[in-house]
Image (cartoon, rainbow, N blue to C red):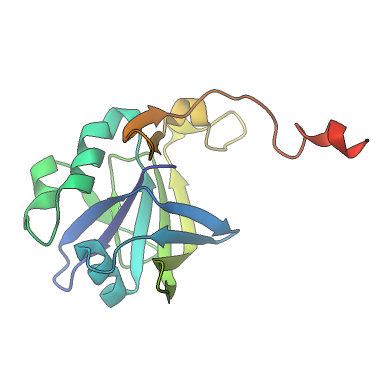
Amino acid sequence: MPVLMVAAYDENGKVNVMNAAWGMICSEDRIALFIDEEHKTTQNLLKTKAFTVSIADREHMEVADFFGIASGNKISDKFERTGFHAVKSAFVSAPVIDEFPVVMECELAEVVKTDSFYCIVGRIVNTAAEERVLSENGKVDPSKLQALIFDQFRHDYYVSGEKVGKAWNAGAPLMKK
């Protein structure tokens, strides 16, 4: 699963960031985050109705992991300890973390709560990426991004990058049977 950095402001404009390994794009302009209702970042984004989701990369693994093991409910200077920098999104009322190379700026679309899970769904209003992680055609290149991937089975991080096939093409020969 990709390692996602979810960021939101609190009621005083203070930045909080959490590491969320259980999240995914769920339609063309939606992202679903399966996170705990009690997280400081969750409480913040419910108040502000906005958040950003960055993709953690190899270069920033230590801080990304810290954002997952440190609780904003217990450590008031969690973001400041990292030395990272944030600017206000031009699209939503949420912080963009400068150090992460890809960010999706989101408005809160809905909250889905069942007996099994709690899910924040955001409407992606803008996506931005640093030029250094883009391919020649202007798309994010996984080999340049080196996105962190969380292995739930062994609790390890891996890095994306190796292309092994083309989507909507690799299985095409089976269509002819």
